[in-house]
Image (cartoon, rainbow, N blue to C red; front, side):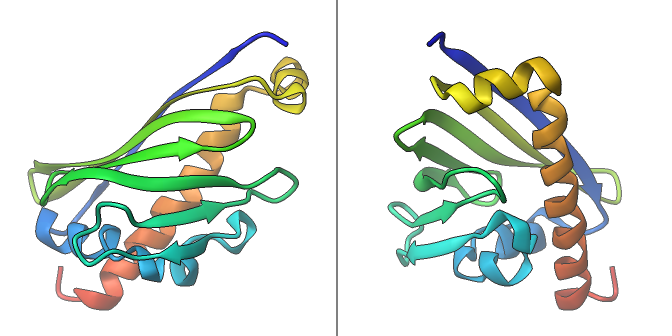
Amino acid sequence: MPTIPLQFSDEILVLHPPATVWSVLANMAEYPAWWPQYLFVHLLHAEPNLIGTEFTIRPYGWRSFLCRVTSFEQPACICLQYDSSYMRGTAQWRLEPAQHGTRVIYAMDATTHDVMVYLTSFIISLQSIHSSSMRAIFRNLAKQLRRIDPAA
């Protein structure tokens, strides 16, 4: 089975300061409450200093994969490692100050040897599948930010 690169990047501009966005993204124990239900996010354990926090994501119809926080730079970046029997790689939440808010970027650099992913890639763009999920995550992030900072 050939190796399939999974290099995606999605972003949104939110009207909240980086520190507020950071407070939501760094609180991974709350991901199951606000991430889209069809991604089946499950927190395995949260570390007080973030590093080593682990959660799984099991997109509807796919197998689960592990996400582990490997490093961070508050309030600018959270680095994740993906690890599963079918996918390995890294991802980053990056926060960049922008006029009137924060540019939130999720970038993924992984590979897979999975036959289902390989066959799916001939039918539909894997980038479009990932971006569709990220749009839902970003919508929910914006709602979560409005809940904690309604004045912004």
